Each structure stands twice: as structure tokens, then as C-alpha cells.
Image 1 (cartoon, rainbow, N blue to C red):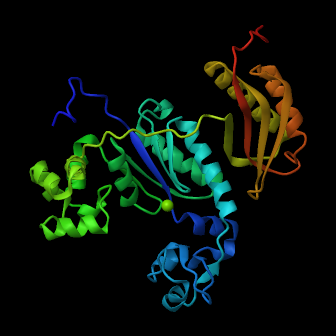
Image 2 (image 1 turned 30 degrees about the vertical axis):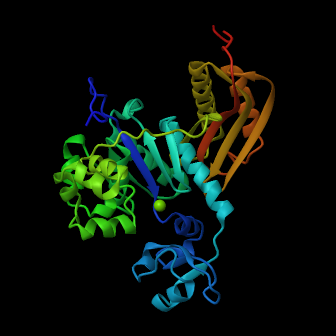
Image 3 (image 1 turned 180 degrees about the vertical axis):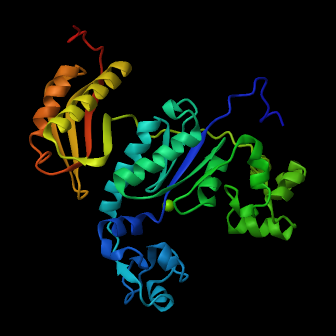
Length: 362
Ligand SMILES: [Mg+2]
């Protein structure tokens, strides 16, 4: 197929699909310990005609699923706790989680409120492998947000997406390029992108139940059956998927933050950590030849409450002394030190291009 071959084979891509586990329910369960371990159903009122928007794994065990009428959910799981959805809260949480993803690679494609693709091919950093990056992302989301994210790693979006589902919840599945076919072959045809109920029925009618069967057949036969999509499907079945991860947002801020194994209580230690984070931001800005108009300090206390303080500067800066000084002023407006600190962050926002002046060089 001329469309898929290339004179030079492109580098193998390393793509992650990150999918939050039971996102809406997980947010409520994190914030209200009384809900933990219980069947929780988010959705419309069971008395009315509402439907289920999300259900915890405990509720799913009773057969409660999204889009089920809430009244039906009550009959399946009479002990369930019903909660109204709080979409602004989910959106805020989602932004926090995606901000973590963006620390690892600028190439983040948001698929939905709780799902994103990341291309880390050129951003393996000090973790050295996509698996290492995936582990670190999972650790960060758990440590910083108290939530779990399942991650699939593979050479394409197709494989990463299916893999993220393979070990859910709280899972990590890595499919190396060599194993792609063995991974896809036994799956039902509906696992492939674009196969909805209608296409699935059509394929089944012609005897195609598993991906392996689609791979074994002449692509022209699938084309005859499904039009141009049939040809794409043949490529998917063979594990060929060159769809790029598309970034949909420009970087709007640059920050550095850290969650501490043990809460910080000593004010001098907190200042030391803050200085270090401010320096990292300065370095990051300098490297990208950008400057920040606003400095932000973020503090999360031991009880997970989080505060941010920000200051807009008279002129954009990437100067480390300025960033350090402003960060210290902002920290003084928090209770850090009198309250134990779990996480500290320093960031620059409203970024503008600009060469960094050679200031503060000794
Ligand atoms: Mg999800």
C-alpha cells in the first residue's frame, strides 16, 4: 500500500494514553472519606428520570453503568450513595491533572475531561523510557491529586488507547512494537477505532469477530465491505496507525512544583525549597527564551487544601533573583510554616517571548 510505506522508516513513537479511573466518582470519594469503599453513583435523581453519569467500581460491581436510568440503578444497587454531578469541580480537577501531563511533554492531546494522549518520544527525560515516564505520571497524579490514572503505552494512539483499558483501574500496560500484533489479534473487532455497533454487526455478518481475522483478509475485501474506512480498518488491524498526537493549546504557564514525602514544617526548609523551585522556573524560562508577566506560588497543606497567590510584575521577567524575591513575598501571604506543607509550587504565567537579560551573573 503506497499510503503506508516510506523510503525511510520513521522513528518509533512512544505514545501514552492516560485515562483517569472513574473520574467523577473518584473526585467525590477523595474529598469525602465517608464515601470510600462504597457504591457511589453520580447522576440525576433516582426519583426523577435522570440517568447515571458515572459510577464507582463498587457500584459497577452491581451492574450500574453510565447512561443507565437512575431509577434502574437504585433497583440494581439499593445501597448506593447518589450524588449530583458537580461539573465545575471536575473541570478544575481536570485542569490540574492535565497540567501535570504537560510537565512531561508539550504534546498533549485532550480527548475528554479525563482522558489525554501524550507523545513522549522526545521527552523521555531522566526516566529514560516511556514506561518510566508513565510510572512517574501515575505517581505524580496519585501524590499531587489523590487520584489514580490508568496509562497505556504503545507505538501509536491505537495501541496506547486499547492498552490503557487493559489493566484498569490503577493500571499500567506497556505494549512494545514487537508485541502489537499479538496484543491486537485476539481482541473483538469493536476494539478498533471507528467500529461502532453498526459496523460491528456488519463485520460479524461476514464472519469477522476478531482483529486477527481482519488482518488475515485482503484489505480490498474490507474496502468493498466498508468503503474507504475498510482500508483504514485493515491498517488498524495490522497495528498501523500514524495519526499524530495533536496539541490543542499553547503553553500558557510554566511551573515547577514538588510533593514532599514528609510534610515540611521548618520555615527555613520551606524557603530553601521555594528558592530552588523559583530557580527551576527561571532556568525553564531562559531555556525557552520566554519571560513571565505573573508569578504564582502554590501551597498545598497537609490536609490537601490548596492555596495559590499571584503577583503581576511591572515588567515580564525570567530573572532568577526577581522570581525568588516575588515567590518569597507570595509565600508570606500563605500559612506555610505555621501549617505543615505537603506540596510547594512556583510558576510563571502570561508568558511572552523575550531574550533573558544577562542579569545576576556573578
Ligand atoms: Mg476515565
